[in-house]
Length: 281
Image 1: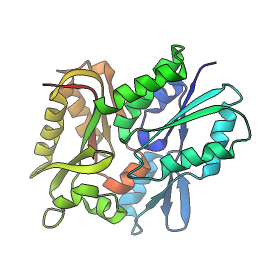
Image 2: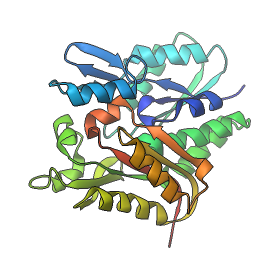
Image 3: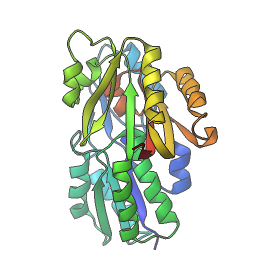
């Protein structure tokens, strides 16, 4: 039987790719006051960012319930006897732990492996995508796990936005707290290191911040996958895609909308470049 692949909504994989590769998404939750929404299900990215810019109440996020993962596992267990769940970094969220705990709540018998991607957004998404492609090709669980473990160190991203205020309020700022203080309104550049948010610089203008993302992508000697993500800056994302097309085929650059959960911690100006590949020596 084909190994089925599960991940969470923070992976930001475009819906068409999710459908084509048969990936199952378990949504995290976003709460505005007393109203709770399933990320990307009850609240689309467009609806979320519209509300975020108008609301006086800042949203908060929460992990899926163990029952939500267990229900997904049980449903898939009707079609397969092996499931691989790949989650966002356990250092930023309890989602990984919930995905593990949920295995014990299953009503059906099925082998379930849970892997911490140590990443988020499309960097996590590329680990999931490569696993799903391997599964579709008929690879065994062990072979897919080898693919996943090989690619986790090969994915990376850089994100630019205009304030660290959202990350600060959400408690996910990690080592990027070094950028706080007088530069809350300066364009910070963050990524992840050892599964935590990590500062990679700051730029004095939006244009220079976008240059930073471009040069990050150019720092790879070999690129297998590339994605540009955005919250509300669609035009900037499109222009960055066109610029990156000089280095990587335009038709292979995925354009993705940041999920409400990601937007909660970054704000509406978010722009991200994610890459799967190998660095220049």
